Length: 326
Ligand code: ATP
Ligand code: MG
Image (cartoon, rainbow, N blue to C red; front, top):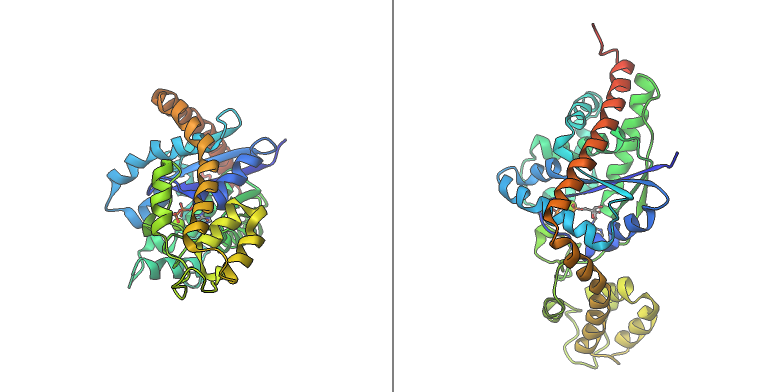
């Protein structure tokens, strides 16, 4: 039997190049060798967007289309909707009995995200989303989780939860490991590219949109004139060269550090590489865009498949926890 991969995305907005570099690229590469599950995380989206349910609904099909456009093959990968697997919510409740509030409060990603969102106090669902994420992974006994680096603490938390469950009750769950992709900086140069921060280049961008966004992107602020020596390490554009033109990153690093290439030329090269990557994605998007019914059918059948697995796992979980009375 093939090992399982599980990942997902909060459907708070369309997917961007950060998702591609951090996770989608790995998912596409892994889907032949592993049994792959990809979750449209609508419940996890609610942890920060509970007051915008319509936005979440509007993004469901957009994100599904993004998956298909980047090359997720529906014959190889199972797409499913998180809220339609109520067993995940049930497993989350069981896990929450033995996860301490302190371990969640000290989770570095929770801390960063709470700060970025300006939360003075944390909502219960937001603080607990790593527990829910552990249930997402555990219900299908996934072993490999392709994620961006911000997710490392959550995968660690999942491993701990699985170990604790197996020690407390019976060894029915499986410990996953993370496959960590690169991190892509946002256009503002202050934080990772993210849907919520308005600093992203979306996968459905036209060539002109990519060009415009890159033109306005932040670069090394100490570089005033074209021949001033630059500091590529703090420039998001250099990060884009590393991600999309890795063969030339050394060369760009030296040219920028020595003031031999201006920011405008450097940006043009990065734009070209991004558009080259996006071109086949645009082509596949055009093909699927004309088939909205097919996308719905894929989501329904994928969710059915995931649900059947969740039901099986929950029989084992309840048995292990002696939650079967009649
Ligand atoms: P939000 O702002 O709503 O949290 P997001 O853009 O951070 O959205 P998520 O849905 O939280 O996206 O993340 C989905 C996956 O993509 C995770 O595995 C995450 O690590 C990865 N990811 C997101 N942004 C980046 C990035 N800039 N670089 C690398 N990986 C990323
Ligand atoms: Mg996020």
